[in-house]
Image 1 (spheres, helix red, strand yellow):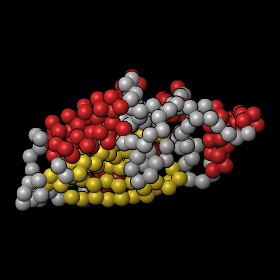
Image 2 (cartoon, rainbow, N blue to C red):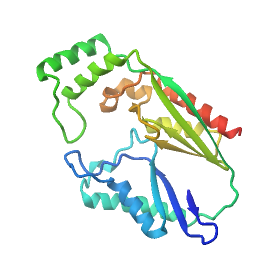
Image 3 (tube, one colour):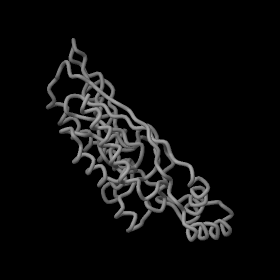
Image 4 (tube, rainbow, N blue to C red):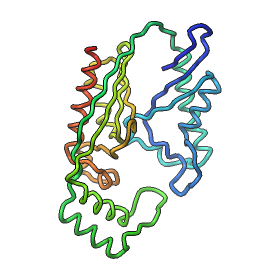
Length: 252
């Protein structure tokens, strides 16, 4: 979305959406930065003026390309590519007036992941060895971290998680918030089944309940599966609730 001044035509704000983890800088970097998406925002603002706002997508399974160039040059390289793509589209966009904006919001609850007796026993054994402390690692997490996570999840597993979701639309284009690191395959499914011609997912918006993986991914395992906090029905529920809200806004 590019918002411009109605009288002067100058850019007020550019909102751009892209799916990917902003972690070009590796986990052993302790500098505070906005990573490659922040660099993209700077370049878009330099070119168009106004304020540039980046919003992520269903980035749960979208990491940076090949985990390479994990330095400031990598930030510039990927940030430049994202800015170029954004500017190419922004410069082709025609100004439209009097577009009705409509939106809706809903709230629902999701079930927490159930830690099995076997997982709890494993966690307690690890915690006995580590004293509940865990070491920082450059990327991912170790068994020491997962053990504490499992213990905490077990203590909360009877408490549902409240989720807020917002959808707004302009014409036949919808923007839907996802308060999670949604696996990209689920995001593609929501887009494919959406009643709108164009649907953009705003990941990590209005909070974050962690990873929402596919059922296939849960079966295969991995880092995101080990550290998720929602139960195995999360994929079906987020798809159902997302399509429900999209349909509601479409009917307005």
